[in-house]
Image 1 (cartoon, rainbow, N blue to C red):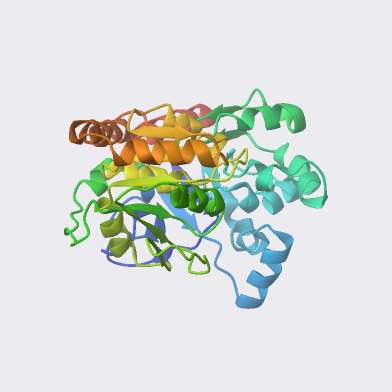
Image 2: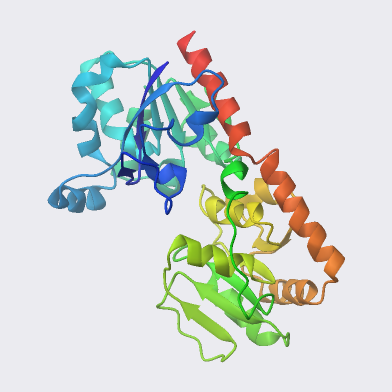
Amino acid sequence: MKILLLINWKIKYCDDIPKDLQPSDYDCPQETYWFFKYFKNKPEVDVVDISAPKFIEKIEDKVRFHFFQTFKILFKLNKYDLIFVHGSNSAMLLCALKRVFHIKTPPILDVDISSFHQAYTSGLIHRLSQFSSRTFDYMVYHTSSQWDYYKKYFPWLKDKCKFIPFGVDYNYWKLKTYKDIPEKNQYIVCVGYRKRDWNTLLKAFDRIDIPECLYLIGNPSITCNNPKVKVLPFIPIDELMTYITNSKFSVVPLDDFNYSFGQMTLLQQMVLGVPILAANVPAIRDYINSSKGIISYQAYNVDDLANKMELMSNAKHDFIEKMKKDNIRATQTVLSEKMMAKEFENICNELLS
């Protein structure tokens, strides 16, 4: 199976496997890219990211889809058995051209991350998404509640789409070790730079009296006068994971949107065995329900979040240890990259058959 993979982020193309990047962030001839390495029958995968000249990237940021990516591959589509698009913004121009000019292509499998750009229901981008998506041969999504949006605005996809949980590679993370730091278990960690409800988190933290500090990592523009709150900027992945693994527990205060986001943050903390307190929002509700190592709170509810933080701060050692084990177990089974790869391989085989 020869797959053309279009992804909606930038990666490093390299000759040797880098030590400082996750498998989804580099392409190296020494190994099959990302989760495709777990396919039973190893495919040949050509990865094309969204890299473009700077002036084109500025235009793409404004129009909100990646058209240069399509130009790079438009005249070599017949070399492949399958086109796998990870991120619908990378499929819009290709599928529009296919529909307008009746271009023959291999089957197109789309992974819709953000409900066709944040679940828009009107406007040019929404109409383009509706127009282009009619040429999808199949679509996968990582948040089950997105189905309600598709059913209403993309009904032609309802019989050729499927919810598959996003998975994390336990085998990759189990080999990682992070040193203990002096403040181990003396703080709560919150990671992220956007789509986080810091307002509710800070109000809840101000309301309670617990021994732990609060570390906010990723958004240096947050302002807070509480001396027990430490704001850190974006930091290298190894340093970030050191902070995460040394925390008492993590808070994932996502905003309430009906599309996929925040799942990578959640899963990376689960695979490292970190107890988690998370907002019960559609983006991660499926994942919360997959592990007893995650306690949820009502989004935007200061009282509920404050009570749950106190609960976890005062929890006994055995309770916290069980949460850690439950989270690791979930990433070895239902939320594993292997399981996700198996589901994708079955779909690929069905499309090619």
